[in-house]
Image (cartoon, rainbow, N blue to C red; front, side, top):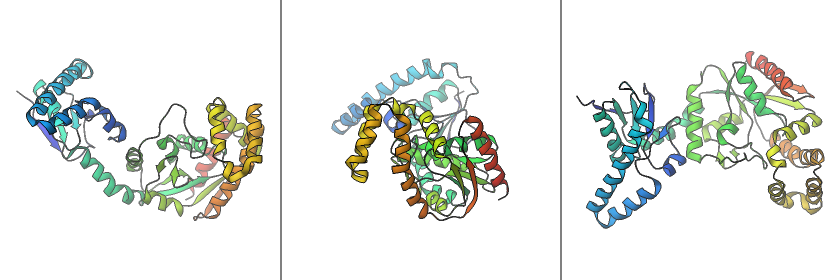
Amino acid sequence: MVAPIKRSPHWHGDFDAIIDVRTPDEFADDHIPGAINLPVLSNEERITVGTLHKQNTFQGRRLGATLISRNIADFLEGFLSDKPPSWSPLVYCWRGGQRSGSLARVMAETGWVVSVLEGGYKTYRGHILDHLDSLARRIKPVLIQGPTGSAKTHILNAARQQGIQCLDLEGLAVHRGSLLGFEPDQDQPSQRMFDSLVYEQLAQFDLAKPVLIEAESSRIGACQIPKGLWQMMQQAPRITINASLQSRVEFLIRDYPHVIAEPERLDRLIDGMIKRHGHDVTHQWREFVAHEQWSDLVSALITEHYDPAYRQSASRRGGKTIGEITTDRLDNAAIASLAKNLAAIIAKI
């Protein structure tokens, strides 16, 4: 007996896996978080089939069926080869049509109980657009702020270990939020993918409890913070980390080894600061790089570039400061201790 194909209006359900059958490029641009990509057509195959389909519908469909059949056979011999009869996935494509239906029919005839997302990715994306901002406006954000090098992200992650709900926007954006904030060998997600990741995190929170978020600019690298969340952050209560200059210098040197390892890229980034700081100042920074005087370079960048920018940004922020934590150390033990202090402040809200 052939197992039926179920039509599901939702992607959040009792599924053993979520399978996105779109091309790798479509998947990379955005997908349901946690989904597995089993493309029934590759990037190149989809273009070829689409081009032929415009010229001759029948020939295009026949080529598409041929390629899809071969790819599905590979999945049956590969990823699907060890799945038990009780395994029950959700499958989706762009609109919940031919591509997802092709894989779903073969899987159902094999014996698995397969569900297809009604409307496909477009249903999912529509839900995100309709509900992301409204969900963001229901959380109770508390911002952790402090100048560059205050180990805010590390403190945030340590606070999570203390049971605090935390939204790590820089982690989701794969960027540290500053001119030198790129992550080595990692690309930032698309804006759509960033929206999806933010939504997934927000949907998991207990809306009755505070959510700790690092104070950010509205844009983290190339990713824009969703409007509703950004509006909530603007008026959120704040906790300030006051770390000594020396502790910040030492922390940044430890935390940004990839920047030090790429002096050519660092030189290009300094180029972008010439307009703001002038040739004399940036020339001195280049001298520090050339002679590997990293402490001098980081100290100069902090005092001459980052701290003035932080003070200017902080002066425009709303929200009440509900606590301040001062430290002259930012090693791992100190960060764990700061997280406990942070948790104690949040517990009083």
